[in-house]
Length: 377
Image (cartoon, rainbow, N blue to C red; front, side, top):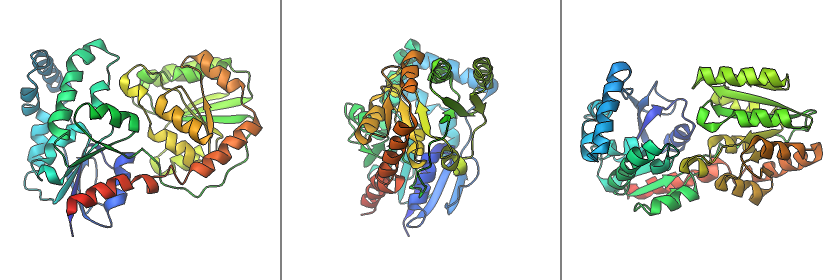
């Protein structure tokens, strides 16, 4: 049986995109995984990769990288990376016929195990624009990330990314990427009646750059009969505390709750009526975003409200299962909320049900399975 190695600097047991890859290949390949945390279900063998440096070691490394970035000594940055050195050691002696590397950080490791003609790189994000809302990052780290893509993704036999808009950007860096959106697996769930009040929900990371307070403020401004629940990852506890405090000030119709385990997420979302994700276009990557939660909302048979982010807005308008706010401010979102009625939301939920099969991982993972099958020959 063909040996396939999947590499990622992430916790594979909780990384939704990685779990879909593992599920797609576990029955047809001898599957080896390499990443953080415990072995995921479906792996024949698992290699634990080292975590990034922390404490003083991390501070020292950041100082060194800052200097090398200013000198544009990109090869030296990569060659001296403690994370990559330790990962190369952990992977020494591993044999695989094909390597699927996730994200640009993992791509260099693939070539020590397999030739480029046997390597597929899955680029989840647009790395040169990851944090280009920060001028210093855009000046120093953006060009380095572009170099990494040209150096370690472009030589691969094939690549994929999460949205057509991102694939278009990567073409300028020499890639011809396929697209595998972050779709959830198809769920056979009923279309539930609309609640009164209408129940809005958001789930995801608690990152200040996502300006989650915008949605909270919008609900506070809205005159619609709604309530809003946020299930947030503990990325920034101080930020979550501020969000909770603001929610309490507005009133009991807003709740900030802990995250839901991935296996339970869609079922939890399905107890609501409308999923909402307003992601300000503060960086190139945010402008191009098409995240997991969008597809979780569809499998939960929810209506969807998003900001005018092209990839998300395009799918909402194409399938008719929600509304695109006119902008990213609380006022813009409040206007969208004010127009909610049970009849409108019920129609959105029916349209989400009709789109659920097409926007499921079972349809989308063919972009991976076909690409990896070509590397077998």
